[in-house]
Structure formats: C-alpha cells, structure tokens
Image 1: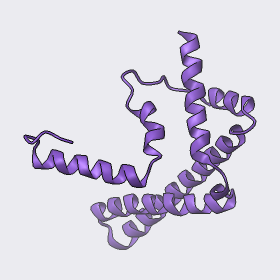
Image 2: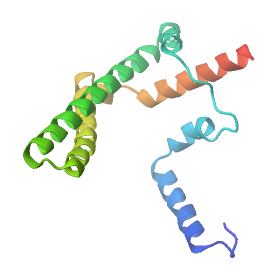
Image 3: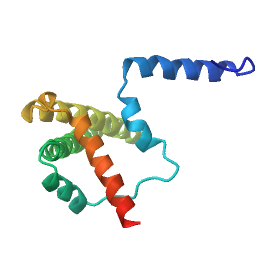
Image 4: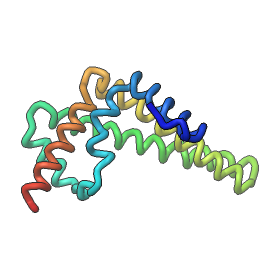
Length: 146
C-alpha cells in the first residue's frame, strides 16, 4: 500500500482518493486527459462544430450540453449582479457587495444549471460520454496534425 515513512497527511490523501475513486469511477475516464505530460492544445468553436457535425451519436449531446452551460453562465451573471446590487443598495459595504457577488454567482450558476438540466432533459443524455468522445476525437485530430 504505502511506505511506513509516509506522513500522516500523505496517508490521509491517499485514502481520500481511494474512497472517492470507489464511489465515482468516472474519474478514471478523464484521468488520461487530465494527467497528461503534454496537454492537449486549445480547441476553437469551429473545432467543436466540426465534431458535432461528424458524430451523429455524441455530437447532438455535446451541442445540448454546451447550450446548457451557456444558460448556467447567464444564470451566474444574473445572480451575481442582482445580489451584489441589492447588497450595495442596502448596505453600501464594498466587502458585503463583493461577497454577495460571489455568492450570487455560485447560486445563479447552480440554479441556471438546474433549469437547463430540466429544459434540455440532460438527465436522459450521457453527457460524460459525449465529452470523452470529443476529447478522444480532438486527441486523434491533433496527433494527425503533428
């Protein structure tokens, strides 16, 4: 398992990772993209659109997922601005308005994501598979370029 000379924190971190790896096996799916020596190059909107057009199974799912992320972003902006505005209006406290901005952004993102999840019925789609297929497609495309 581990060396007996490992520190307490290293042992705790290793056990923490094992605990969550058992409960969320999807971390293995992303590990080959996250833990790379050389990272994948950035992709553009046209690259994503090319994938959406080329993959009839996962393309529409990825497109829907990206539209849902835009709704979540809009919810975040609305939540952040409105809560910060209210906090500033009633308190005239800069740090209070800043905290309200952050809290409203998080709440707005979460609320927007939930709205998008139900609006687009994302719970019926395998969004993770679509993202992994896109990353695999992008990896192959980048290997062909070099």
